[in-house]
Image 1: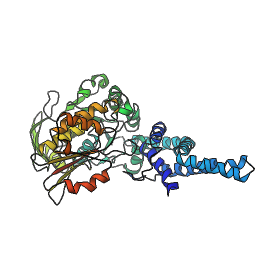
Image 2 (image 1 turned 120 degrees about the vertical axis):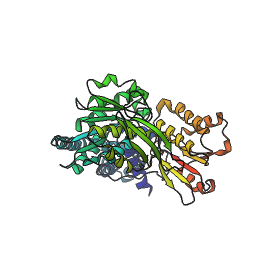
Image 3 (image 1 turned 180 degrees about the horizontal axis):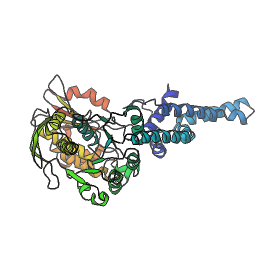
Image 4 (image 1 turned 60 degrees about the vertical axis):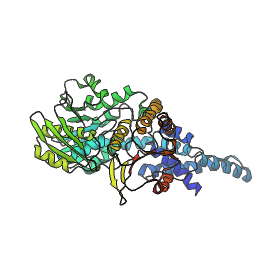
Length: 480
C-alpha cells in the first residue's frame, strides 16, 4: 500500500495548499520523512486531482524506464530503474510538480472560460443585487444572517461554504444562479493582494461588507498592511455607488477606511454602542444555559425589536445589526427582520453548541482559527461559569512572525477562564503552555497529546457530567 499511499499523501498536501506550487514545495520538504498514514481530512478526488495523479504516475514510469533506453545491459538498466523508481516514489512531489506544469496551460484556459461565462451570466441579470462579504473573521456568520433575514422578502442565493475563490464562485454561479434570483450574497476570501479584486470583477458588489481585519493568514500576507489592502479591495472594486458597510469595532477598519472609500456611501455597525453606528445594541444578555443571546436593536427611529438568537458569540449581535441596516436599506420591515433573525442557526464548527446526553455542553469551534475568534470563544467560556470548563486546542496556523505573541496572549487569557487545558502538540502550543505557567496555572491541569485521536480516547476519563468542553480550531496536515 506504500506505493499508493505515498503519492496520494503528497497529492493531499498539494490540495491542502490550494495547488500553490511554491507553498506545496515547502510543505513537501518538511514532510519528506512523514510516514504517518493518519490524516485529519480526506483527499477529495476532483477532476484536477485525478488529472494530476494520472499525469504524475505517467511521469513516474517514463522517468523510471529511461535507463532501458540508454543502457544495453538489462541488469544495469534494471538497477537504475529501481534507483529512479525508489527516488521518485520517496520524492513524489517532483512528479506532481512536473504534472502541474504540464497541465497548467490547459488549466488556466479552462478557468478563464468558466470565469468568463460566469461573468457574462451575472451581467445578463441587470436587476440582480450583489452583496459581497469579506474579512479576516466573521464572514460566514454574516453571510448566513444576511441570507436568513433577506430571504423574508427576496429570492436570495448565497455561495456555499468554501466557495470563496473566483473559480469556486464561478462554478456556483453557472450551476445555481437563475433568472428569478434577486439577491446574490458572495463570500470573498483572500490569501494575497489581488484575490478579492478578481472576485469583484466577477461579481461587483452593490453592497460591500467588511467584518473585521486581524492577523489571520499573516504568514501568507507577510505584514498586516497587506491584509488591510487586500480586504479593502472589496471597497475599491465595488460599484461606484455601492453601499459600504463596515465594522466600527475593528481598529484596522476605522483607521484605514477613508483611504479607500472615494465617494461611496458608508454605514457602520457595532456589537455594542458606538457613536459612528446608527444602529445600536442594548440590553445584551448571554443566556446562562448556553442556548443563545438576547438583546435589543435600535435604529435611528427607535427599537426594531427584541432579538433572541441561537448564537453564542457577542460579536454576532453586530452581524445582526449590519444585516438589519442592509435589510432596511432594501425595504424590509422590522417584523420581517425579526422573523428572519429568529430562523438563524449556529454555523457548523463555529461556536456551535452540542449537548451530550450526560449533561456535557460541547462547543465546536474547530473552524474558527483566528485571534478574534479565540478571544470570543474565551469570553463565551467565561460566561458559562460556574461549570467546569475544558479547553482543547492545537493553536492557530499562519500567524507568521506574530505566532509567539498571539499564543502567549491566548495562554494568559486561558489561565483565568478554563480549569483544564488540553493541548494537541504543535509548533505553537509551547507558547500557550509557557504563558499558562507564567500565570501560575496548575501544571497538572495542562494535558498534552500528540493527536486529536489521542484526545478523543482520553476524554471519557477527563470529562465529568455538567462540564463544558470547547474545541478550538483544527490543525491541517500541511502544518507542523
